[in-house]
Amino acid sequence: MSWRLVLLAPVALLLVLFGLSNRHMVALKLWPFDLEWDAPLAVAVLVAAGLAFLLGAAIAWASSLPYRRRARRMEEAARLLEAELAELKGKLSQPVVPLPPTVR
Image (cartoon, rainbow, N blue to C red):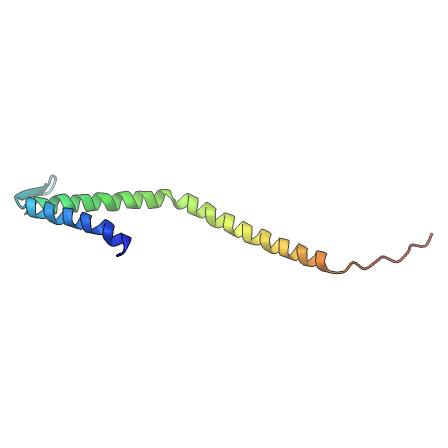
């Protein structure tokens, strides 16, 4: 059994029980407009929680952008340094040609 299923099953059970326990109708209104929507309390709460979760996930993703950009720059610098190191190792492995004696 997957660990995801172990975590998902109790959460799903709680959501189903919450939905079955809160079936009373509530009127949802949007203040400046003359809109009204009648929905079960469980639907209203779960939709609000889902929207709050998505907003929090978007904020967390946006706040990590500078760090991911910096990590990409650091990876590119590491690649360039590794290529330079390999080039220098290749030059060191070549035989050294002795210089001819100088005339005085």
